[in-house]
Length: 128
Image (tube, rainbow, N blue to C red; front, top):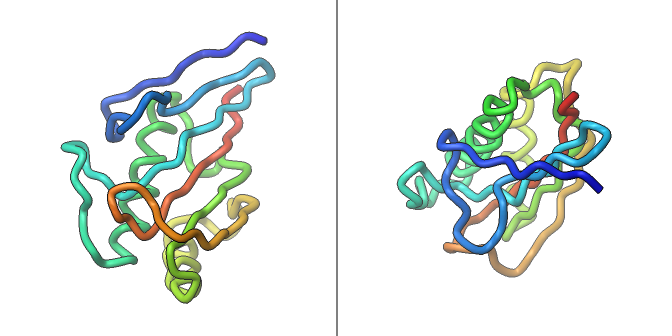
């Protein structure tokens, strides 16, 4: 299988031994889970809504590196430390995505995330 490792300065560097994203044969790109870190690698805020916006900004940085946009995302997997934030997550998504470009999505509650973040999101997007 052919694969291309994607790395960009438009999103925070990986905090472990993994790639920011990988493009595979067929034009599909998989991002690693993005957490709410700024470009300096620091958590942006304790506020959940601000964390979601930062994660989406980080995903957008990877998209921009590939000359893609939010409408190219086909699937998101969201990990939340507290599922009671589900409604806030939905409100942010309604503002961030256009109505006709909502990707497929799964939301999973987890016990803990790296750097004590409250949200982590993985994206799969069309990279043709």
